[in-house]
Amino acid sequence: MRNNRNSRHKKKYSHKKHLLPGSNRPAKKNIVADQRFRKTAWQVFNFAIVGGLATATHTGLFIFMMETHFAKALQANFIAFSVAFLISFLGQYHWTFRNSGDSHWAKKMAKFMVVALIGLGLNTSAVYIIVDQLLLSYNYAALFMSTVVPATTFIINKKWAFT
Image (cartoon, rainbow, N blue to C red; front, side):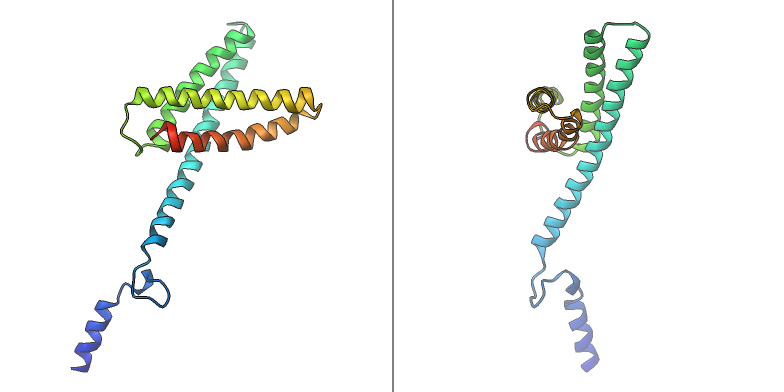
């Protein structure tokens, strides 16, 4: 009878690794928080990959058009931005934020464009303030552009554009 009782005890408490210390309750909040953290970490990683690809496309296409005299600087920048925007939206929509929200893709694309314009505004403001007003090196603007702006646009995209 003792063996039978111990085997029931083992079965009943076989999930102990998921219990809070000193408790018989599962640590659901910790599990859920861990799952959210992992999902967000993967989204940040994917966001950076897609953003890097879009940035490389924008820069490469711009340089190509300038070198081949396909377009003047502003035209080349607009064309390159447009192609990079499409690559970025498609990557973020289908890969980074793929399981989010019920709204139509066109609504998400419009919101994504607003976020992209916010990012452009932040970049432009940073360059103007840091380089033109404070007379600091453009490296400080580049640091702002490569840290604060992507973090800001990620949060806005996650919390608003792709919901």
